[in-house]
Length: 215
Image 1 (cartoon, rainbow, N blue to C red):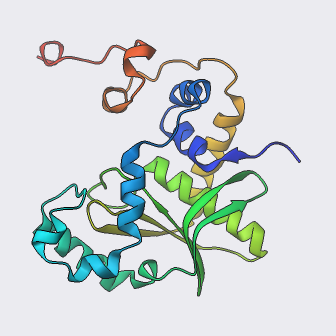
Image 2 (image 1 turned 180 degrees about the vertical axis):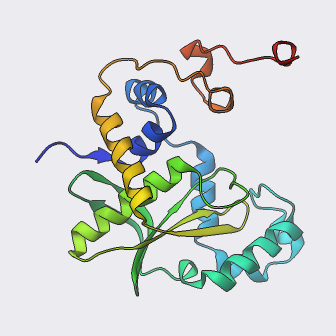
C-alpha cells in the first residue's frame, strides 16, 4: 500500500501546493488558535447557556451576542456535534490518515474543527478536502459509506454540514494527486487573496498587488 497522506497536508495541497512544500520542510505544527477552537468545540452545551460576560472571557472571533445567535442556530440544525460518539479519533484510510475532531455514528459522519473564519455560505475548499479525507478514512475503517461531513468554526459559533458529492470527492482526489507529486517547490500560485493570507508569503516571494497597482 502506498504511503498515506495526512488530512492537514491534503488541505494545504488544496489551498496551494507550494504552501504544502514549505510546511513539510518546516514540519509545521497547528497554530495555538486551533487548540483554542477545539476547546470551544467541546463545550457547546455550556457556551449555549453562558452569560455574555462569561463568553467575553473566551477566545471568540465575534462579539458574544453574535456568537450566541450563531451557536443557537448551529445547534438547532446540527445538535449531534455537541454530543459526538468519539472525539480526537485517529483514522487510517486507504489514501489518507489523521485525526477527526469528532465522529458521529447515527448515521456515520465526521466533523473537523478550524480556527479560521467561515465563508458567507458553505465551507472553504481546503476544509472541504480535509473533511472528505476524514470521511473516507472513517468509511474505510467501518467498511460502510459515509455520506455527510461537518466543518466547525467554533470561534464564530458556526457549524456547517455538506454531502460528499461527486464534485467534492473529485476535489479531494485532485488534492491527493497534488500532495503526492510535491517533491520540490511547485510553481508560485500568484493568487492575491490566497498569497496575502499565507504564512509563507514573504519567503515564497510571490508579489501581491498593492492598492497603487490596482489604481
